[in-house]
Amino acid sequence: MRVRTKKLNSDYDWDYDPTTYVKDNYALLIPEDHHLSRAAIHALMSKTNHTPGTLKNGLHIGIGAVPRGSALIAPFMAHPRTGATITMGDIGQIKLDATKKLMTNLRSNELGIWQAHEDDMAAANPLWHGAFQAAAHLSEVKELDMFKLRENAYDIATAEHVFESATQDREEYKSSLRRFFRSVKPGGIVHMAYVVGSEGYTADGKKYPAYPVMPDEVVRYASDELTDIQNFFTSASGQMREKDDTHGYKGLGVLVGIRK
Ligand SMILES: C[S@@+](CC[C@H](N)C(=O)[O-])C[C@H]1O[C@@H](n2cnc3c(N)ncnc32)[C@H](O)[C@@H]1O
Image (cartoon, rainbow, N blue to C red):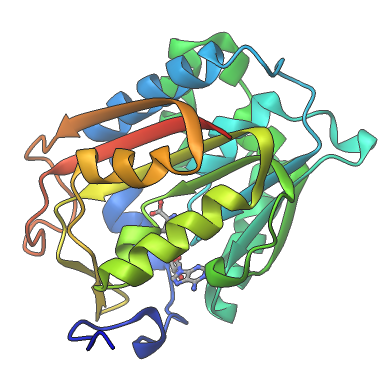
């Protein structure tokens, strides 16, 4: 049997207050965010097997009160009056409450720090005008463990900086990725952004783990479950948030693919 030397997801208390994490990481739109949004929008628009405005079941896992992923997939969703939803999942009541409060604000079009992110997305493609508010109207926030996602449940799924930022263990990282990919129906769209080379980070004054993944490794694992993969890597701009705590951080990646 393999002996685990690295800390697992369950070794951590995930019920942290995301307020300072969000402020530290997203109040300033850094070049990495701009590049990731551009690459995601370009890749999503190239997946011509789905027309914007048509999908019913969306997933955003590990949202942590950060609505970027939901806003990126929102233009592909049908109108909420058709019953379309984006299930926004995370663990930890404080984070779920913060996400619900954020959705209330976004529904009233009070975007706050997210306005700059939306303006940047809309500059890439006008379909993303109003994407944060649209995501909030589609939102269903609930407790959801990424290791227990249902198979073949969603038409489109997103996660930003989640799987590599939730464990130090490679096998556990791989198994959470596989679960995420398999939660999407065959032919459905997967979008994920990831931190490259990170060994950990701080949130609410506590230390959290990371698995220092590289872009070619993400593509290798994704290839088992996805086809038509586009992967993009942007190196660290030097304007990174958490200036004193960037252990190993080399930049950010984005991957978009279609579930086999
Ligand atoms: C680094 S944060 C990323 C937050 C946000 N998505 C972002 O883009 O900044 C990692 C997130 O994964 C969540 N998480 C950790 N373990 C999880 C699990 N087993 N199931 C669901 N979410 C989990 C954490 O609660 C946290 O919100």
